[in-house]
Structures are given as C-alpha cells and as structure tokens.
Amino acid sequence: MELFNDNQRYQPGDIVYVLYRNPHTQDVANIQAAAVVNNPENANELALFLYETYYPLSNEIAVYSTEEEANQAFEYIYGPASEGTWE
Image (cartoon, rainbow, N blue to C red):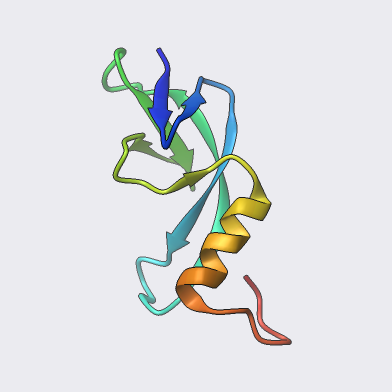
C-alpha cells in the first residue's frame, strides 16, 4: 500500500516529520519524527506511528519528507524560533 501526499509517495518503514500540537497545552507545537506503518486496524491503509499511537495517514495531515521541510513550514506558520526556545 502506498499513499501520495502532495505528490510524495509513502511506504511502510518511511520516517517522516509532522507538526505536532501538544494535546494538553494547545499553544505548544513542535516537529516530531513519525514512522509510516501499515494501519493495524485497516490493512488497506497506512498510518503514522507517533507517541505510541497510530494515526491514519491521510491528505489531511501535513507530512514532510525531511526535517528541513518541516522546519520551513513551522517557521511559516509560527514564525522563527526565539533564542533559548525548543522547537
């Protein structure tokens, strides 16, 4: 199974980067690496494995092939990181 996301082809085993918003503190977001895996609940779908949880991989999730692309998107959305802050 493959998924095309913004003309990118993903396969199980790929490592990708997503912008992840902390569910407990909504004003905190960071870049997180995630693994593309077969969805354990649906064999015909791919999923992202992130923080011990499976998320369906769909075109509704912004997925970046490189950390550099994710950093550029992060800065576009949230502005440049200030000195002394963590991304």
